[in-house]
Image (tube, rainbow, N blue to C red; front, side, top):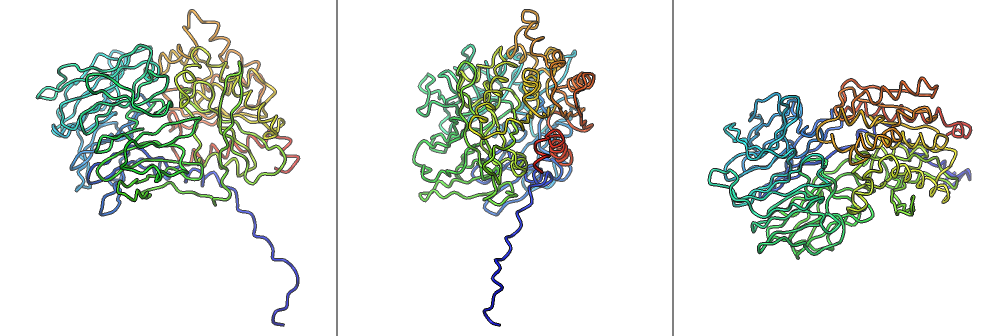
Length: 628
């Protein structure tokens, strides 16, 4: 009969399926290489289907992909690359990933033209000299069994000239708008660019070669980054002389720290050509800065109203300002990396030009909660805690992730790989242990001589804090780390062999002394800073070598290794796997013949998540008993 009812409530909809490994990888899109001028903005975007980076262009006519099939825009200088793209008026120059050579592509062309033909050389750190139609680049090659670097120019006619040589490393060339001034960063062994580097500043001669030296910045044991000229020809750069990387400007014959927050305004320069600030046409700077791991955007001047700054973005990867407005690559807890256009008109509108996909319903996203805790010696440390989604009242299993570097950081971003775990009932702690960036020079330098000690302290103290707060089940603790993070993972398992149910090391360091002998030039002396002189401090190397102390490690461990890795050679993983196997420790190893330092193949990245989940479940008797 009309209006009759059985009285039964409708069945609730089934819960959404957890994010699969393939979905997590497909949603992991990387953006970079942001540039703009009065006509266009260009950037690179990775394709999760093949791992290649292609240039995107936005103009008043719309958006298009510029990079032809078969090319990928990525440099391998210093192994980590960066700044593989620069913008000219009628086209762009880029480094092709496969051969590491320079190419030119006009905006009206679909083909690329080679500018270099030196198969034994690599290029990166690009900047464009509009007045001379040439590219300024860092060149890398091997000679007499040594890796060498210098600053060169490559003309559109393929002419190559040397600009500067003699330093061990070069980065971030920048030229003034009038073409009369050039600046760059250089440093020498045994330093890293975040421990001690210097800024060079010169006038250019009529033929474009370095002439009269101008005041730079060269303060012992301090770091300078990202030189850039404003439209008035004044040189700016972040410098950590005050204790944080803050913007400084050279004018009226002297260097002055610009007003602003006492906070880091950039991150560690692992990549060439980072862009964490820019200047608008009126000279006012637009800067990113970080406090307690969260990023902010500041604008000096009235061109962009502060009220227009999006509040739901907490990390800023790159900034570019031009007459078209301010553009920035930003990310947040509920947003993947997004290209924002901050309009400079009075209304200060913000529009989205590109964005990584969000594969989850907003209500199911696990958002990071800041964890502040006291570590050894009452040192104040920080991390980001992602609760399981959905969660319940019981303390959840905890996966602690240890970032690489170690002079790097974790940020509160939408990371599909983290959501993969929270969707399966895990809480995740993304830890900024001592030595991480974004907390000032003192915190960054606090790992000097303490690698393998302070970082391990921070892992264990963080876990204890979460257990006390009932945010982690002490019976179900897991640990993972990649590269330098793998070293921390293995040392944590050596010191606390009964704390974690299982762990994973992705291309991690197991023998720091051997790594020192075998790794590439960029990091050849890094281990000395992190641990000590191998002769004077031989005891430290022995005490902090996971391989030397493998007999104390009893935790089931899963290893992943790329066989083409030139940073942490495969021997590091193979030796540790053999030692644990000989000691009767449950151990597995997954090797990828086609991968380098960091995995790029979508298939391989999916396999990592799937194998890791299966490994943890096998070694989680509490979870098996409860049906999880």
